[in-house]
Length: 446
Image (cartoon, rainbow, N blue to C red; front, side, top):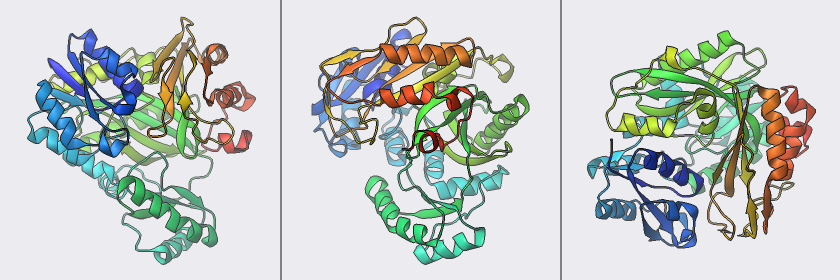
């Protein structure tokens, strides 16, 4: 196992990684921007280094400075967390060149899966079902319109690079597609430095269900079952749960085996997630692969009892998986909600100083927090300030627990999306399992 690990991230995921490292006696190195000097992850780590000014491109995306700190601190490995540099091929390459283990897959795999166009090609070659669409970049808006007419509207316009719903939009007719094209291409260029676009057939009323995989360096690959991440706003996940109540056991196994097949075709190592869209007839289609730890990984940990960060560390250190597919058990039902510093009605960010921060302390609650009382939420970073996870013996109990925990949660000084989360979790449609990616627009009219 490693002796010292640098966490090239911030917020709750940095705290989460530090916690598992401590459990295994691994020293940790935190990096922080000038805006994050008092953040919880800085206080939790064994050592902490200033990485730069508040803007991400001057701090958490500054590869040269991060590697300089890593060399100065004498770390064995770097854990990238999620977001930021976690799926940056250059960063993974630079770590390898510096003799520092990057806790994740090989940089060539990151590069291939980082392009949705290339990922789609790889899955077609591997015999994985994909959403009907094109396996090449769009040439221009006229090309997009012609192809959309061939596959019949509605279509989904997508940016090839990046994630988080940026550069993605449904177009139901030619006018919508023409209006969407330029704006989404510009957003993709601004956020990811890559304005490459492509389109797929839009799957109506889909569920967004993903499969967690683990793979070691000797070819052993397993799946840790599914997560349902269908509750989204603006194509960004808000509520995640495991297991899915929509899928039957046969489909769950088939999806798990398909995810393993996809990972093996890529010679994948470490933790990764294969994301699928599932239609109303339970047909599933490859959406994308995330070559990193997911925000929603705690719900998988809660129902399987497997610490995914621990497995990441072991695999990166060259260890074989210590368990087989048949050893992966499931127990209970877990739900996670993401708590954002944002107006619950408009979804606009709500920066400011947190004057009160009191997460629920119920015994069935797991809190993953990026802030504490007195923290200042700045406009420089993603507005997620915490994750609240509950586990019950079944979904009904988990929902009851979650509603109690949200009632307990107290955050003052800024606005949060807690009222919206209470609306979602308390809604009869959610309780009845009518959970699709259209939930918020359909039932909350937002």
